[in-house]
Image 1 (spheres, rainbow, N blue to C red):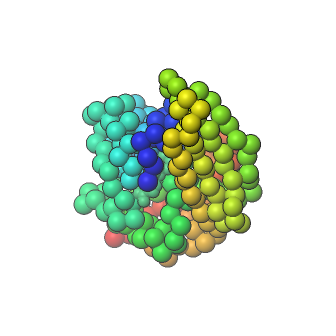
Image 2 (cartoon, rainbow, N blue to C red; image 1 turned 90 degrees about the horizontal axis):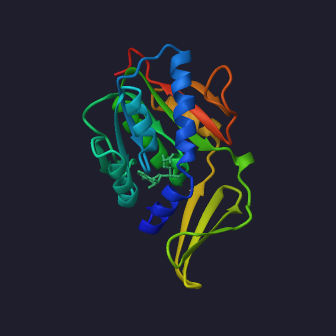
Length: 239
Ligand SMILES: C[S@@+](CC[C@H](N)C(=O)[O-])C[C@H]1O[C@@H](n2cnc3c(N)ncnc32)[C@H](O)[C@@H]1O
């Protein structure tokens, strides 16, 4: 779970850029494929950027996230969008959605593939027949140790962060906050690199048809990304 300071840093250091770009690519892919979406659920919605973009498109969007700090920022952004704090490994709303999304390598925050499978089974249950589940996944070729980055944050506060790859299948994002030069907080976000072929196999085992697994979402054009974009569809006859 992301702590309060990490949520603020996420919101203020430009990491909202990712869901902004993803939103445009997603809307382009939907247009290219003539898919009309009325309702959407964004899993691990973070600061609510994607929900807000979908809402502007006339889609009735909802979001959920494990971190109360992220949901608080999302609610500030748009108090009318329904958000809830929940764990996506057990989240299973009664109603169904035309589209379920999960971006910003949120699936990589789930280390155990059995939990990833639980998420997929639940998503299958709350996706309408013929509806889509679209998410991204870290591309293992695109993650490596990075140089540390440091910047002023709030008054007297300086923030430092660095991404490292401590093991073949692990990524760690370390963030430290300094107040008047003294370290007051260290938070580590640990992610697991999953094999896209294994993830696609799990989707199929849960009943989904894998429509696409590529480094860009749009079928024609679009920006090649640093992540895998996976599109899964629940069969029209799926129950
Ligand atoms: C890198 S952020 C991505 C946020 C947003 N989707 C975006 O693209 O900006 C990953 C998010 O996954 C959330 N998360 C991690 N584990 C989760 C879980 N089990 N259930 C729900 N959300 C989770 C975190 O709280 C965080 O907001």
